[in-house]
Length: 279
Image (cartoon, rainbow, N blue to C red; front, side):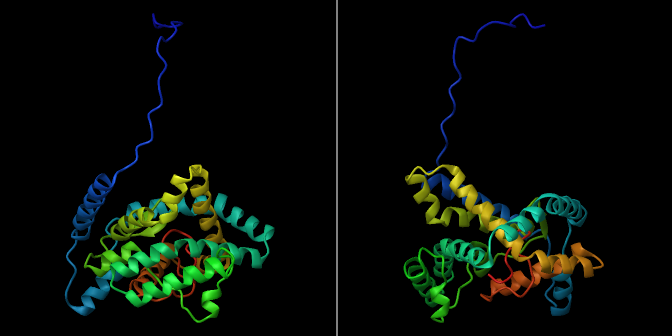
């Protein structure tokens, strides 16, 4: 037994204050992430021949053993926890209410889409996104309705991973991230930057909203996306000889469409396990 057992501490340990990054430090971290991205993207030389390039892109998975291990863990977690929650969400809420929740979540993301459209010099798309946000936030009753789509204002696609692609960054190796699923280094960096681009993050901080508010937004978004993919993913898993390879191929097809500003194809999960294919 230690000789100090039972001795009362004379000084209370004060909790460390939360660290808030200033613009300079945030920029430095983003620059470091971009540097790591450049290294990862350059890990493999992409063939110039079109046929060889297509084969390379279809099979470029140098971390496949590790990816398959993480994939198996993700599937186990999905089956044990996420699917039951998604089914409960479907049973508890009618379709109309689930759609309203989806509209709100999409509307909250419109500023991030707008910023990335501007970064990519897609000024018309940025204008469309801005008008969509204004209309849906007002006439759509805080985003619970998609008035803009009814007025033929098409929902745009825009994220910082797409912006990095626009300026010339390659995908890098295929990755499977715990819980979030298929990804690549470029889009992983992009997702982090999009968090900092989200103005509602700073509004919540200024209003001293508890972190549970931001966390709830992420959780509800994930549950809603998974609910919308319950049937299609179950069917895909049932029909696939190699479910891992099927999702890898479909993820790449979906991401390629998004990079070119197109809406995702049907039943192709993208960022994370459960991205709504129709977003």
